[in-house]
Length: 109
Image (tube, rainbow, N blue to C red; front, side, top):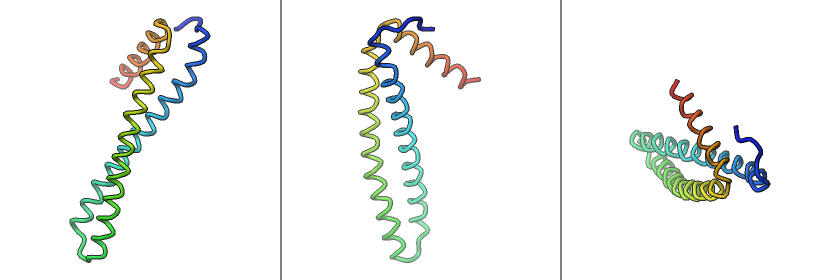
C-alpha cells in the first residue's frame, strides 16, 4: 500500500509498531486494574471481619495508585506515538490512517 518507504520511514516503522504494542498493553492494564478495583469495592462491602476490611481497603488503595500511574503512562505513550506519526512522510501517514480505518471497519463487521 505504501510503496517504497523513505529511509527515515524504514527506521520509524519498527519504533511505531513497538509504540502501538506498548500503548495497547498499557490500556489493557488500565482495564484490568479498573476491574480489580470494582471487584475489590464490592468485596469490601460484603466483608464482615475488620482484618479482612483493612486488607481489602489496602489492596484497593494500592490498585488506585497503580491505576493513576498507568493512566499517566498511557498519556505519555499516546504523545510519543503521535510524535512518531508526525515524523513519517505524508504518504506513510496516509497509509497508517488507511490501515487504522480498515481495522475499524473490520471491527464493525
